[in-house]
Image (cartoon, rainbow, N blue to C red; front, side, top):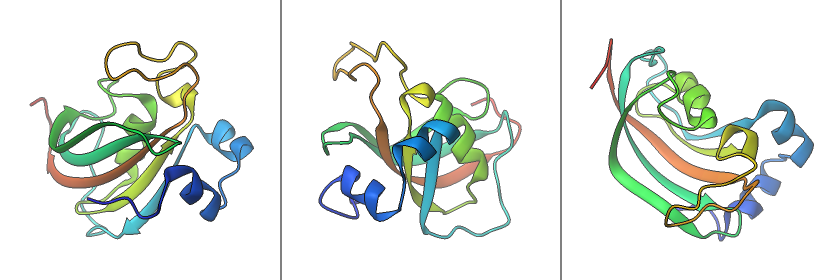
Length: 135
C-alpha cells in the first residue's frame, strides 16, 4: 500500500481539502480504488483493514497489513469509526482526520508520539467484513 504522492499535505491540497472543510466535517475520505459497492460494514461489525498512518509532514507513525477491530463503537479514533462505515469491501482510500476526530488537543505521547492537535492521514483498504462482530 503506497503513498499516492510525495507527502500527505500535498494530497490534501490536491484534493481541494481546506482546513475549514476538514474542521467542519472532522474527516475526509477520498477513494483511490472503488470497492464492490454493495458490501458495507455496519456499526458493531468486525473488520480487517490494511493501513499506513502518517502525520501531514509524511512521517509514518503506524502501519499494518492486517488490523482487526470493531467499527462504529469507539474502538478506534472517530475519523476511522465514521469513514470506514462509508467504505465498501475492497475499497482503498486516503482518509484525512482533523484532530477532533483523531487524538484531540492532547495528542498521544505513546511511542511513536502523535503531537497535540495533529491532523492525521491514512492510506486504508477494507479487506474483510465480519458481520455482527465482535472479533
